[in-house]
Structures are given as structure tokens and as C-alpha cells.
Image (tube, rainbow, N blue to C red; front, side, top):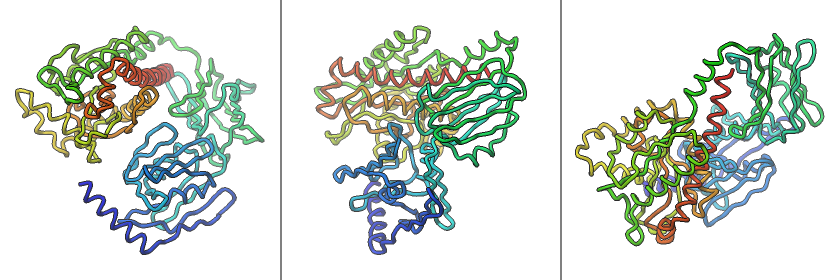
Length: 498
């Protein structure tokens, strides 16, 4: 499959080298450029990474050995890799449907899908029109990209998506006279015309955004005086939030019940394999089932220490065999709020190493499909495999659709766990991927599968045999769990209180 893909790409590149159309740029107004005449390869239009950097006049770094390129925007770092459909914006991983392709000392980026993914995270106005085709980019220094008003049960939330972090001393909110409320952000820049079009809602009767020299002020005309307010900054998503509350209501009991119902208070930890299923066998006879059980228990202990009010539920606590379908069933029956399955990887290529995190979706890359097939093959140890015969690619798509209510949370969780491992484990981060793992099917909660390293790699196999190294892995996974829980619980508190 990979060989065929490379042949197709090679043919496309040959066509490109013969034609060599140039990327044309034209100035429409100060801070705005229009890009036309993209490279067309197999019906997909591409823009070179260096061409994209030229729009913003920013520096790039290209590694010809790894075929990776970094673009250094003012407050963002964009990282691309040849033959990959994943990009990194700072430390966050994002998926684009089409592959990034290599050319001499540069990379080609699929312009349409790339634009759709990257715009919300850069705070830059980018509009791609496939009928022309052209890409229009406005790169004025806007760092407050939008204003979103959300009416809640007991007040109104105002969200300001931002492209950089602000210090706590740089934003201030206060209630004025004659029914006005004010929010000022020092160092904030907006598209005044765009934000003037935002429709008021809830407590807000009128919105007046004013761009001043070095700061922006939002004036809100209120329908009634607010009982209380709070302004704070979130990191994921990056935003400033203003919470305006109406006078208190008498539903304190209902409020606490709502908070407790959705609070992330039960975490299900699944140690892969076990019993008659040893999993992958690696360096010096190291067995996957033993490694992952130890790591899983270490993660559980860290959760218990940091969050004593959280119940940790294990699918297994000893060397026993648990059928794949029973693992999600255990999570559901115990009313789990988060599910993480922990595994160790293996590859015929002994040089392959690193950790990766998976979402439940049909696999798109050959290595992801191989990993899923290896993990799914443990059904041979079960008494009957008829249950799994329904999970061909089409049925797997339907299964993931059924779990789509938790997909956004699963994506956030996967990204945070992968980042936690990157912070703690001295190995290669192989990113967030997707594949069809039976063990995740049916889990009615945010769910991921983590491959903590390759037992087949001599160096990594040795490391996985050391308790100190397994503790670092557990700390990385816990870091992702902790960050997700704090973010999730904060959102629940917002939703329940407004």
C-alpha cells in the first residue's frame, strides 16, 4: 500500500517538475495578500511551506535528513513533516486529510485542507476559494479573533478567542453606571468591523468594541444589573472568558446535583493483554502484559494521591485474561467518565521506537493499521470470535459515529496525554493517530489507547524493563489525565452554574 502511494506521489511530482508553475502573490491592501496559481498534483492544490512563510516574512528551518520544516510565526511555531497528514502548532497536534509532500529543500502543503485546520488557531483571516482558485490572507496583528456570547441558565458567558497569552494584569473587567459593563485588554488587537457585527444575547443588549492605541475596550450595555462577575483566561482553547451572573436563584441543590453528575470522578485504567495472552515479546523475553500492568498501577497510584475523591477502576489488577469486549463493558457498567487502555508496541524493524496515542477511527496510515491488527489479534485467545466479525471497516465507521458524542473530548485527551509523555519520557513522540481498536468500541466516555514504547527495540526494551523508566511513563500519562480533568471539571462548573 505504501509502495503504491509513493508511486502515485512520484508521478505527481514528475508532472510538477515538468510544469513548475510559480506561486503568485498580489497585494490587495496593507496587510492583505492574495495567492494564486498553486501547484496541482493529482487534483489537489498545494502551496509550498516557504511560500506560506513569504506571506508573513518569517524565518523557516528545514531538515533535509528528516524532511521536516518549521515556520516561526510571531507567537506560533508550525511544524510539517513529509508524507505526514499531521501538523504541529506549538505543542498541539492537528490532522489534515491530505499528505504533506517533499520537494527540493521545501515541502508542499495541501492548501484547502490546511487552511481549514489552521485558521482558528492562528487568529489570521484566511479564505480559500477553490473556484478561482485563490487564497486571501489578512495578517494584520489581530490577537483577539472573535467575540462569542453564550446565554446560560443563570447568566451570560462572553468568550474572546485569543492567539497569545495575556498576563492577569493585562485584562480588567468592571461594572459601570447607567447599565454599562466594561472589559479592557491591554495589548489586545481586534478587527473592529468584524466584532461590531456580533449579535448580543442574554444579559447583553448592545456590544461596542473600540480599538485604542495599545489596548482594546469592550463596552456592553446590559438588560439588567449583574449579581456577580468573573474574568479569567483558559489555555485550551486559548481564550479570555467573562462570566456575568444574574441574581442567585434557589436551585442550589439542583446545581450541586448537576455538577456531581458530570464531574470526572471515575477513571477506568485498562492494562492490555494478560493471562494466556502475553502481548508482544521483546528484549530479553520482556512481556508486554507485565510492563503495562505495572505502568497502569503506577498511573492509578498517582491519580489516588492527587485526586483522592476520584475512583480508579481497573479492568485487571493481576495477570489474568480479560476479553476485549468485556473491557469497555466494565467501563460502562462502572459508570466510568474516562477510559484509557495502556499497551506496549512491537515492530519487525528493530530500530523503530517511541510512544504514540490512538483514537478510535478507521486507520489511515499503514503503520497505524498494523498496530490495530496486532492488538486486535488477541481475540484468538477468546472462546468465540463471532462477536468481532461485524467490525469490518464499514461497521467500524458506524461504531465510531455512535461514539461521536465523545470524539472532541477524546481528541483533547489524546493530545494532552501525548504532550504529557513528551514532557516526561526521553524517547520519540510518534504523535496522535487513529485506528480501529476493538477494545475501545462501545466505551461510552472519552477513550484512548496509548502505546508506551517498543519492546522490540533493544534500547527501549531495556528501558521498559526498568522501574524508574516505567514511573516516568506513568507520570507522563498522569500529567495528561490531570490536565484533562482540570479542564473538563472547569467546563462542567461553567455549564452547571450558568
